[in-house]
Length: 318
Image (tube, rainbow, N blue to C red; front, side, top):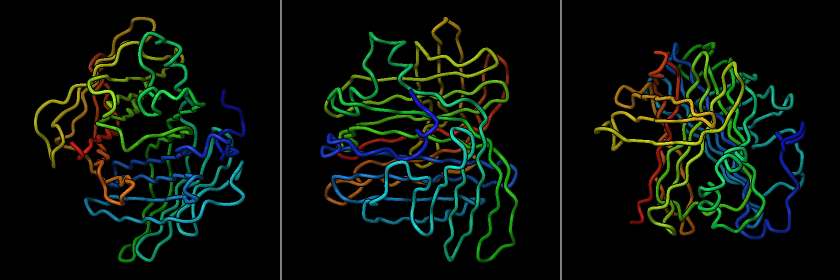
């Protein structure tokens, strides 16, 4: 169960000396200014390092920053993560956060505020005890402690490049925070997505692993005025050929624990923008390709449209 200090870094347990990892992922979309981006923070004590990265797409031009540093001494319950150029500050538990990036090419400052409650993916495991949990594949079924939570956010901020005036940003954001045993190099393919409609918030995941070929793990949730609930059915279809090896559209057929159905269509063909997400491999080569597709989604049942992210990843090891 998340408490008021669980947005912040946690004490490292003894089992960390396996492939323990704590991750934060922050995204932002401003459709009016045509700005999208992500920031990723990954801490691995067994390797005595932390990696940070940020990619910002400004009207089709991608700016990237990345760094690797020594695992910090004062990690547990720090109110700030990152390095001297890219950082996140935890301002108010589960409600307010700041993201800052300052390089020679780009200055970015974002204020995140709560749009929907934090969702703990443990609820999906409890609602679907007859199905393989996400960490059964991602964590090699080690039965070690694991936490995975996400939250829809509102976003405001400022952006300035070396060649442009300051732009005021406004739009939506999302955050993902996970902690536990991870075997990223054994992932075959996955979809990770959020859809921020005016009346509905959705988060959906599927995952296939190289060590359990053909076995799919799925999870998801919906939040609306009735409250938050886990999904019982998740079916994700890639349709047609889109840009740079992506599908043209992605269709999500979902059913919550009460039997209510939802169909979401995401337009990758006409995506607002995209940025890469680099994932490390033991030999230093990138063997897992990930693309963050910022796009528009439609909820078929209501006709609502929304800003969305459809993250698509696949292994190049096969």
